[in-house]
Structure formats: C-alpha cells, structure tokens
Image 1: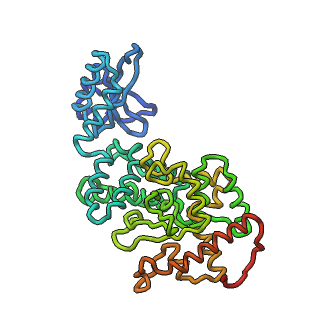
Image 2: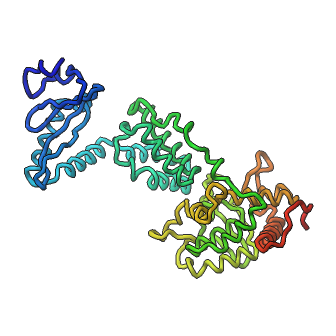
Image 3: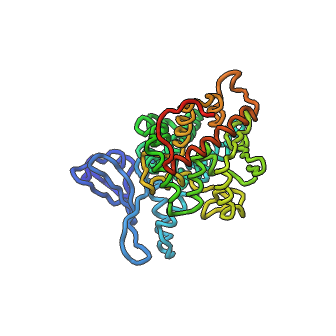
Length: 413
C-alpha cells in the first residue's frame, strides 16, 4: 500500500500493516501529534511530536510496530500529552511508566535474574550465592537490570562483556557470561523467551586463562619485585601486592581476607570453606612467613579498624575492587605481562625447579588432587609448607636485592 492510498486517519490497522517503504524515510500523521514512521528498510515505529517544558518541539519514540499497535500507541500518546499539559517532562514520565510496567510484568532482566538465583540457591553455599548476586549487581544490573530481557541483543551483551574484558577481569567476565546465559535458559525452558542472546558469544571473547595467568619470566622477576616495593600510590595496595608475591594465594582470597582469620601467634591464616566457594571441603591453611607477618603488621594501622584487610573506599563493608591489584600492576608498566593470579604460577615454577615436594606445592596452592589423595587432613603438610614458604620468602628477598644468580640449584634444604 502506498502513502497516496491512505483513506482516513487515525490510520487503520490495514494501512499500518501494508504501508510500503520508500527510498527515503517518511512519517504519516495518525492524529493529535502522533506519527507513524516508515524506514527504507521496512522498519516501522511510532513517534510523538510534543513541546518540551522549555517550549521547543521535539520527537519521542513510542515503540516499534507491530509490537506496539495503533490502539496502544494512541493510548501512550494521550498519556504523554496529558503529562506535557500539566508541565511534566514527557521523557521522564515515559521512562517511569516503562519501568513500572516492566516491574509489574516481571519482565526486566533483573527480575528474571533474581528468579534464576532463587531457583539455584539451594544448590549453593551461602558464600557462592552472595558472590553470584554480587557479580550481577556490580557488572550487569546497572546496564541491563531495568531492560526488558527479551529486548537485549547479542551485540549489546557482547559490548558489556568486552568492557569487562578490557578491564582485564577475564575470569569474572567468563562467570558473568555463564550466569546470564543460565538466566536466559530458565526463561526459554519456561516459555518466556524463544532465543538465548548469549548463545555462541563466548567464541568471540578472550579466555580467562590466557590473560589472568600472565606472569613475567624469572629473569624479569627481580625488577618486578623492586617496582612493587616502590609503588607510589595507595599504601594498602602496595602491601597487598607484596603479600601476593609471598603467599601464592588467589587474588580474590586476599582481597576478601578478614583480620579475624589471622592467628599471629601461630603465624597462620585460615581461609574458611565458605569464602572458598565450596559446599564441601576443608578450610585452607596458609602459613605466614616472617616477611608476610611484617607486611601484615605494616597494614594493620591502616585498616584494622575494619573487618576486612582491604576495605573498599566508598563502602568499608565490602572489599576493594576485583581489579585493584591488576590496575596497580598496569600502573607499574606490567599490563599483559603480570597479573595477580600469575604470582601463583611464579611460585609454582620456582618451588618445582628447586625440587620441593609436588604434594606440598599443590597443597600450598590449594589444588585438590583427584580421588583418595584429594581427601586432605586440613593440616596436612603444614609443617613442611611452613618451611617451604619461609624459604620462598627469603629467596624472593635475595632476588629483589640482586643476590641470586638464576639457574637450577638442586633440592633446597
């Protein structure tokens, strides 16, 4: 149907459905400032011409056709004209109505994600449930939380995830992608979505292992250790980086560490099972070298007024950002060359090259072996690991001071 064939206004349903595109975009008036827009590619939508509170004419989109039919478009236009007549800003009132409508219909991504979270919570421990929701609240809800989940395109999800990728938080990005894909799977199997926009997205994203495990070679390590000690910015971050080099723990374990977990008399850090994200298993015991204790004592006056070793700047009840150590290493010039997780690989390499017992090293890294060997006594190898990690701390000191010649020296005593 061509524009010239329109017989009456408001536009009939037949006209709306059959209007043909032209070489240029055009609008057909429906009435009372409401227009029907047709693009050259055939896309159709509704627009309202209205006066802003400042008295200027402007356009506002009311939705695409056929999702928004003629009757609904006219209803929306009438509401917004009424708002404008009362001196209200139609854009603001439109957004408020959309948010209320989406919430009422339980159709926002946040509502769907919280439903998914509730459906899975019985299979998780409390720590895991908290971390999953925390990741969604931090990385996803600010952008997509109030959006209709079926309206979010694959390319938009790709943009969000690539933003996390550029921050260097690849492991977190991978987990967030998996969580959100599961949310859509729940919507799909319950008949509330047809497609999953996150299907196949992982093929075009970096893997966590390639970036998160980056670490310098042993020849570059002394310079890195000296750079960390001279880190000129936040003192607690500098001390945190030094602790990462000494203890071979996961960056998340250190960021979330609480003062109550440390026994300075026994020189021992106990990481509880709940914080390790396991329903079953054992707490992880980390022996503290003399150097680690000294750094912790240096940190105490800065943060021991709070439960966390590394409290956030804006909210002291939450730990520092999951990018805090990575960003510090970037400021030192080690972007793409060293990450927080990479210090675990450095420790493993050095300790294995000096022929420490592989079981002791794996226990220090909290790697659980399969089968019977994986059923640890929680204090297994603690004496041996205490000796091993003190040797390692002394070794790093000598490296930093330039008193070690690189090479293989045989088994340490």
